[in-house]
Length: 113
Length: 112
Image 1 (cartoon, rainbow over the protein chains, first blue to last red):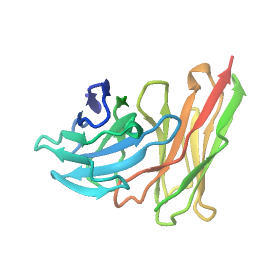
Image 2 (cartoon, chains in turn green, red):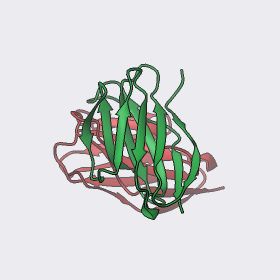
Image 3 (tube, each protein chain N blue to C red):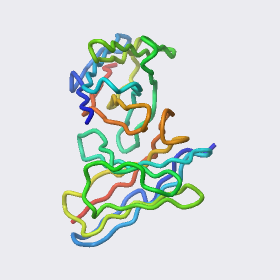
Image 4 (cartoon, rainbow over the protein chains, first blue to last red):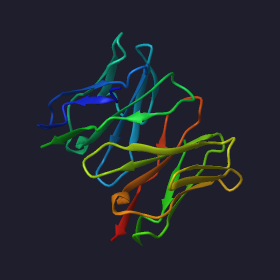
């Protein structure tokens, strides 16, 4: 049973560029959430997708956007990258958007230079 | 929104001793409290969770207790081993939205 998988594992981007991160949820899960984890901090909720729609959003600017595909996989897009966007981006999945256990992937390390 | 705080930030214990990490939360509507273990360079791994209709839950050497009145919950690790060394995060959510609010994490160091 494959867990939550994310790609790429590491990437380096230049300030002002755009980045796309990808996530496949754990088998049987239909809800995907994205979190940003800065060094030495706890993960911060970005947004959640269920039935291909953004259901909830944390306190992140519109530069952060996402998408969920019919097979439940998801993408996180960040435009106009800032140095402060450097972080570990975590994808989490669950079955349904309420009341169920949440599992995380290993994350994508983004460095903005 | 929910605010979760963890104490202490760093905890060093001798191998074989117990470790306890305490978290407090602010939102009385929160009713789901998971604990995650994160090793260097890896994603958070769920180790135990508790829902608000239960006061205590145990899984081998790990247990979690919940005090809803005081709005705090604690992770207990007994007979610590070197492989328990990691950063531990507590989190809270309202079961209705699966949106987790995390604490800042506790670095646990088990000294052989």
